[in-house]
Length: 120
Image 1 (cartoon, rainbow, N blue to C red):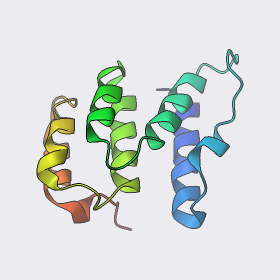
Image 2: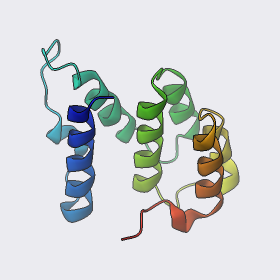
Image 3: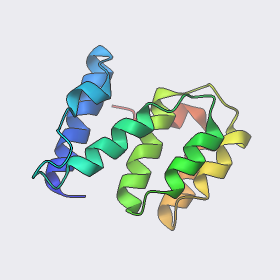
């Protein structure tokens, strides 16, 4: 993921925290845009739209994301948006889509729901 995608993801997260804006509205890039980050942004948008009760749907979605950084960003955003809608044990399957340190961090986050949201 390049700097432009990270910047748009950061802007979306700040906007969501500040005003509850819909992520998709912030990433209204046209299909086929010359911006190479548009697919990362669209991937985050689509992941944010998966309902909190649909762990299996999120699992399928994550399995189709090749970039581990984008996959992690999608999962963290989805967990933040859907905090408390699933039991930690139900969410552990999503951690299997992460690798290395991201896997361990995921286990810690879903096992400790207060960690879903970053502290300031």
